[in-house]
Image (cartoon, rainbow, N blue to C red):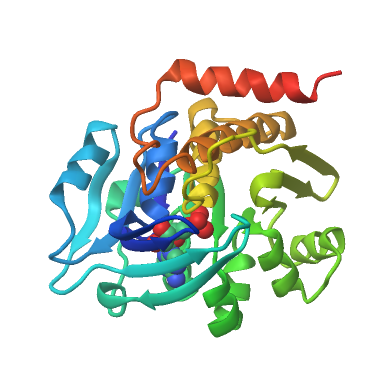
Length: 299
Ligand code: AMP
């Protein structure tokens, strides 16, 4: 099996109630690829500018991530700035500088185009659509997005939605796209727009998986220390798809386990800024949290 991840490699500036960090490593692709790397060896497609550190690319390589699909362009790397209030589920985008993303034309290398699983991580939906068209015969296509694209490119977003199997989004985004305040009704509306599975992320309240005849809820791992929630969603999706790629099977019971691994990897991401915690987790730590989540809901 093989997994291709398309998304952003970025600099993030993050403000939490207690700290501000400038231009730290971020991006949907960074978090998703690192989380997936605990289960499989993902191939990534992204673009960086001249200012992006080679050290991070080397770190990805050391975790088995194939970075041949990363394009290096003249100019500056994508930069996103976000602020969290006292409630870590509430964040405000302060700034989005597309920079090298502005003229990016993503291209799947021939061996990437044959991938079994394609993850269209959060980037411009027009770029997601281009990648979707280049994938030859994927067994599973998943996508994610962010409110910027729901507000600025709704038609393009709806076009990509028609061509994917799994849609990852947070509860607010699902309600926005569906134009519906009730989460379950909104999830069902999304299911009528293309995907056969909608994964609704609810921050510290976990995630809800909705299929046509299937529903599953997973808790967030109870973390005492939440330093920076950025990348939790991408880590969830990366681990979810990385696990499916490892086992090569897409039954409802596989989606349940994938969601628990998603929740586990997301719980590590939020314990530090950027990818600091995510880059060095042991298999035992992952299994311990998987078991703890299982125990938490068994009765
Ligand atoms: P998450 O917290 O999982 O929703 O993902 C946050 C990450 O998404 C940050 O590291 C950002 O760099 C990245 N990001 C935010 N906005 C965009 C955007 N418009 N396009 C691509 N990546 C983005």
